[in-house]
Image (cartoon, one colour):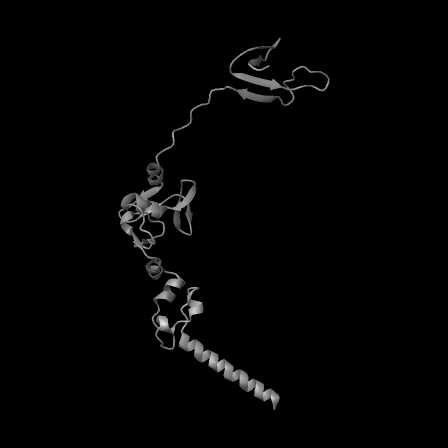
Length: 199
């Protein structure tokens, strides 16, 4: 039946057409067409209605931004306060896209830092490319506060020679002097406990 179309109505019949719609359904008792029991519609060579042309990325991006005299706030999807924008098949930081649209590619090894401390802001003038350490030091997190410390609670300098290496690789700045003193105290207490039990 390729190239034919069924016309419903009294004395329905098949006639030729390049735009074919097949209504194929068989009743239990005959092989005649049945239009009342879930007909199967198969479209062939039907013209596609043209959809809207995709908007340029820049237009899509800036349509999600609310500009004020200070911050340019992201009105699209956010994650932990940071704007996210779907681009080239993946979700990307909105503030990074804003930076690169205004200032060019992000320098290798750099991150985008909010000078205004407003995570939802995408104003290029409020964004700066900095190292990961600088970004952490400027932040308002526990890690930032830990990195900002210069001395331990007992007054020892938290410099590279006085930090526990095994903890440093995990981001913890532990005073090596205090750690050694604590281990020594623990060892002494353990010996005293052992001696008291063997008497």
